Image: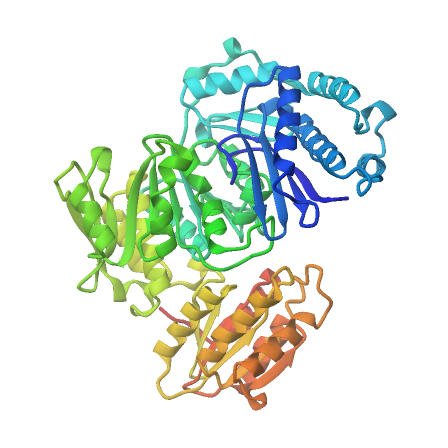
Amino acid sequence: MPFEDSRRLTGSNLFFDHPGAVLELAELAAKDSLSDGWRARVQRVRLELGWPDLPMAVRLHAGGASFALAAPLDQLFTATEINEWAVCATLIESDAKHWSGLEIAWRRAALEESPERVSDDLPVLAEFAAMARFARLSKSEANPRLLELVEAAVTHQLSYVLDETTLTLGAGVGGRSYSLNDLPYSAEIAWAELFDIPIALVTGSNGKTTTVRLLAACAKGQGWRAGYNSTEGVWVGDQVIVYGDYAGPVGTRMVLRDVHTAIAILEVARGGILRRGIAASRAQVAIVTNVTADHFGEYGIDDLSALADVKLSVAALLGITGLLVLNADDALLSVKATELTQRFGAKGRLAWFALDADHPTLQAHRDRGGAMGGGATCGVRSGRLRLSLGTVPGSRGIEHDLGVVAAMPLSVAGVASYNIANLAAAALAAAELGIAPTTIATVFAYFGADVQDNLGRMMRFEVRGVHVIVDYAHNPAGLRGLLAVAQGLRVGGRLGLILGHAGNRQDADLAALAKVAAEFEPHLVVVKENETQLRGRTPGEIPLILHEALRRFGVPDAALASANSEVEAARMALDWARAGDVLILPIHGVGARATIVELLTSGAEGKE
């Protein structure tokens, strides 16, 4: 088959602010000339079915092309079928001889995916027959009552959450869910009893989970019960709903549908945006922490610019009064900020954070001010974290002193610059959500002192005089930041680390990770197998690539060791270390982390 993936987009996404369908076409089949034929066919079907004139997008990339079309909420399955037909028909028209077997392969794939299909439900190439089939599919899928309710929710300025079985109107404590098979009429809904809760979105390459947890702690300090999801699981208040990677649509829906959630803090990962779109429909504030090289080669994302576009999809949910919090120290985000109006129209206001409170972008933003709190910034001045909440043009607004940065546990005495950035971002979002600056300052003064505050991220221990840091660093930027903290903790001792990666990274990504490790001239690198994250690689393949890259970048053989698991790697590093050394343990498996933390705490003290 020429297309590698065909899927529904259930919310705002990389391509447009609307649900729809997207198809990934393989490199050898993708050509500029195909887009016109595809668009024409999609448009003819839309006219036949009476669909509104919604956006379409073709995005060429190194691995091929993405063909995306927006569609009515109740027509997403039909939209995927239309998309596949339009692509296949256009390919065959472009080169009938080359694609002579495509229709048969396409029908066979559809039957394998759904063996219960009857013959007249299978894909068909001839346009007249295809139109008749789409009409049947569209009629079968149509749910006019769903559309009526969603339109009414928008009119009432309410969030909604939708999946294959359920519609939720409102959110959290103010929401109510209904089965799609038994939806009420709009007139039967007690609209006055439904309401929204404050909703924050957090995305970026690094720092997402830490920032989510910071915001949840600030909400708790304000006396609110926060529901939040992340790569670690889903929580509502202090209760764990489920453990695992829920930084996507499933986790978002769980948080927003829980009737105990008073404020929602949602981690929005790149993969979820690309696979399904964003499950939430509205948000009050959104953070993009940073954009660094990671996950290239998946879903047609091959460079930082495209990755930034994915992350900035969160801006579509803000409306005209929402706040988008961006990192002024990230040069790409600064450039992309100038393109937001063109991409989304009038979508919310901007707030900027940086390590330096007097960064030129922050200074200019404060000087401009703006209506409804525009001009907000946060950064460090004279060693203190300063939160400035803008008011009106020409006014610098009120500046809040959130405390000495070096005294904030997450900053590791001021050397963990990436966590200082997370603190600044969280301060802006928390203030926008209505959390008092005094509460923010109080939370920042203690959060991270207990290793349970931020599991898996910057967890510090001391074992027999050895400084040990357990973290999640999973890309070159994250590892560089973590090793910079290690250097700040070294006082004459040696540096040791363990190094591994999940199998769904490109070889070049693994080499880049090894290069960063080599730059810090470690005395020991235990190359580990991430045994629970092979993701298509054979056992030993990732360690071999890392070993070769480390040698190429100058790490001597005497400093290299191997381990078949994350726990074995940690034990080897601990056995090697002596008093005064610093060990960096990037651990990615939840089970492995639990074992290692238990090992460390049995003879260690958590460090502030």
